[in-house]
Structures are given as C-alpha cells and as structure tokens.
Length: 275
Image (cartoon, rainbow, N blue to C red; front, side, top):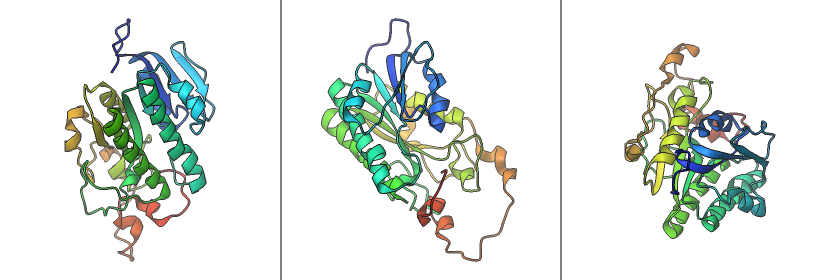
C-alpha cells in the first residue's frame, strides 16, 4: 500500500469502476472519507464530478483506456461489468476481458490492492442444505457466475505471480430491502456493503482473500470465519423484513432446482433482471 496522503486520509487516489451501478452509487460518497481524490468510471452516464472526484466514461474492454485510468491510483474497487446473467458475447467483453485489463493495468502501474466484486453466483449450484466457507469450491449457476469464477482465479494468479492482493467479495443481494424470500438469506444492507469495502481496503495484509457479502441474517448459508482477519462485522439483518413475504408450505415439486440450490432462479437459466 502507498503512503497516506498529506491530508491524513488513508489514500491519495482511489479508483472506483462501475460507479453508475446500484452499489457504485452507494459507495461513491463514502470514498471521499478515505481518499484525497476518487477516480470514478463507468460506461453508463455518471453524475457530475464532486470537487474531490475525477469522472470518466471508460469501456473496460478498451485496454488502452483502462491503462490510462489506472495510472496513479493507490487501490482499485472494481465493481464494473455486467451484474446479471447475459449472452456470453456481452459477458466476455465486460466481465472477462474487462477484468483482465484491470489486473494487467494494476500490474503495470504498481497497484497492490484490488477489491473485486465477485458474486454468490460463483457458488450458486451448492445446495441450500450446505453451509459454505471461504474455501468452498466454485459451482457457478450461470455464465455470469462463470465470469466471477474467472475473476477470482485471475486475481489468484496475479497475487501468486505478481503480489497484487485481492479481496474477492462474493456479494449476496444488496438492495434497500429483499425482493423475494431467498434474499432474506442473501441480504446485504448498503451500510454493511460499505463497511465490507472499507475493511477490504484498510486491512494491512489480505493476500488473496474470499469473503461473503451478507448481513447478519437469521438463516445463513455462508461462514465468514476464514475471513475474520478483515474485521468485517455486519451490523444489519434481514430479520426486520420477515413480514414482507407470507409463510408458505413447500411447493408440490419438492425437487424444484430454484429451491434446492443457493443460486435460486439463476440455476434455471431463465432471463433475469436482478439478483
């Protein structure tokens, strides 16, 4: 990690990709507390730059543009890319080529810490009867999940080969409130998401780490004890939303894949809009 800024903030310049997305919009204001300059990028329209920001439209598949964007930053929060299942030709540009370009630019410019937005869909074909830990193997539930497995493996290579540390955030479902009963398990509040990113940036050493992005929900599919060194302690819970969905008996089809597997409807390969 580079030396703190002259103003006493932990970083001189942070890069946030995917700044126009759902989580990018939540995180962007918080980064001002941590860095003198926040460089924000997305291919989608972005709000005007604040006084501490550098805002640019960058296609992650454009390697030269990514190289210029990464120059001079201390650390990267990589939220950019497609965040739902999509045709492979689209995913390969944004999520595979784009993630490679981020890591290669980090290597060339000496950036030593990346916080990578992975997803619970990298492990979505594990059954709901299992509690996974940070060493549980990949079982992607979609091509989108496959791209997140690629990102995690790429980050492993760049750590082992070049010493670039990464915290892979296997994000659950981060919205103002759960949208279906499954999200009562996978819910990650915006406040807990911001704290998870803070812990991932501020920890002295992270190596190559995996952490599940979930609040302190009553039902848990994921065990974060292997990432306890990050100091992430979720403060919120989906318990407050228990009344949103009526209690129902199991469906007549007890073998419904969307209920058997942690990825929910993603395992069905149907068009989806949100996680």
